[in-house]
Image: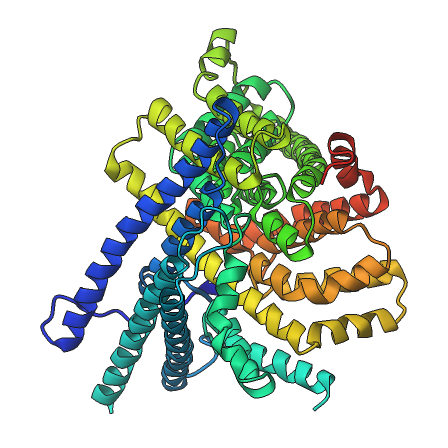
Length: 181
Length: 450
C-alpha cells in the first residue's frame, strides 16, 4: 500500500512567479544532486582507502569514519528536496482510491501543509543548532575534531530546501484550488 | 494522563497522519514533534535536530547508501543477464534446470546487489522471457523471479539486517552470517519446487503431445558444448570474486561493515567499468542518482523513525507496552506467533525499515525475556518481511515483475507467487524448529567474537 508521494506538476516553461520559483529550485536541486553524487563517491573512496592505508602502510585512519559520515549526512539532506520533487518520499496510498476528487484534493493540501510545517520547524531548529555550534566552536569528540557546524549546516540547508519544495507544492495546489473555485 | 492513554493517542495520531498520505518520514517526525511539544519539557524541542543527527551519524547506518551504490552499479549493468545465462548453460541437463538457474542467479545477484527489486528486475528481464520461450507457464516464471528476488533482504549485505542490528543492538557480522543458512534453505526449497513444477508441466505437455501431436517448447532439448559453457564464465567470475572478496574482507577482520560497503561500491564501479565499459559520466550518473534517490528516502525514514522511537521511549510508551506484553504470560511460541502476525499485518502498510525501527523497542524486550536469541529472531523476522514483498496488498516485487513482463496478468502473477509464500512459511517453521539453520554458521565462524 506504500507508494511515492505525489508532487503536483508545475509547467516550468510558462512565465509567472511560480514557474520561476520552480525553475530556480529545480536548478538548485540539480546542482546539489551533482555535489551529492561527488560526496557519495568520495565517501566510498575514503572508506576504501582507509582499509588500504591501515593494512599496507599501518597508518592510523581515525578521521575516515567521521569524514564519511559528514559526506553521507550531507548527501542525504542536500538531496531531500530533489527526491521530493520526484515524489520519492514514500507514503501510504490507502485513501486516494475511495475518496471523491474534491475530498482528495483537500486531503493532498492537508498532507502538504503537515509536511511543510514539520520540515520548516526542523529547518529552523537545524539553523539554531548550526548557529550554536558555530558560535561555541563545537567539534566532534575525536582526535581529528572537525567542526560540527559543517554537518549541522548541511542538514539545515537541506531541510530548508525541502521545506521550500513542499511549500511550492502547497502553493500550486492552493492556486489551482482558487482557479477552480 | 496515564502512559497507556498517551500510548494509544500516539498510535492513533500516527495512524491518522500516515493514512491521510503524509510521507512516512514526515508523518513519524511530525507526530514525534507534536507529542514532544505536549508531553515533554519545552527544552526537548530545542534538541530535536541534534537527536536526529546523533542517531543518523552512525557509520553503520550510513553504510546503507554505499551498499545501495554497490547494488546500483551491478544492477545497471548486464551482469544479471550474464550471470543467469552462465548458470543456465551449466544446469541445463538438470530437470527444471532453467528454473533452478533462475533461483541460483537470483541468490547470487541478491548477495552482490543487496536489493530485492533490483534482483527481480535484473534477473527477471532475462529469465522470464527465456522461461516462457521454453514453455514454462507465465505465472510460474513470474512467481519464481518474484520469490528469488526476496533473497536480497536475507542474504548479506542486507539493508534490512543492518537496521535490525542497529535497532536490536546486535552484532551485524553475526546477523549477516545468520542469514546465510536460511537463505540457502530457501534456495533449496525454491529449487525443489522449480524441479517438481517443471516435471508437472513437462508431463502435461508430453501427454498433450502424445494425444494430439501438439508441439510444446517443454519437449525441446537445448544443448551446450563445453566450450560454450566456459565462454560464458569470464564476465561472471569477476563479480563472484567481488562477492567473495567482500565477505573475506568483512569476516577476515580486514574491514569494518562500513569499510566493506565503501570497498564493495568502489570495486563494483571498477568492475562494471572494466567488464561492461560503463565508465562515461553519462553511464555512471544513473547509478549515482538512483542510489541517492533510494538512500535519501530510506535515510529520512530511518532518521525520523529513530526520533519517533526516542519519544516513545522518553514517554515510557515502549517500556509500558513491553511490560504489558510480558505480563500476559503468553507461552513463548504464542508470543512469537503473535509478534510475527503483527509484522505480517504491518507489512501490508509499511516498508520493512519502518516496521523494524518502530516495533523493536516494544517487541524485543518480551522476546528476550522469553529466552529467544535476538540474532535468530532477526532472521525469522526478515523471512516474514520477505513474504510481505510477494504477497498482496503491497507485494513490491509483484509490481516489479509487472514492469518487467507487463503482458502477464496481475492475477496470474499473484497465483504464481502463492506457492512461494507457502514455501517461505515452511522455511519460517523449519528455522523455528531447527534454530541451528540460523545460529550454526555464526557460532562456528565467530565463536567468542562480537
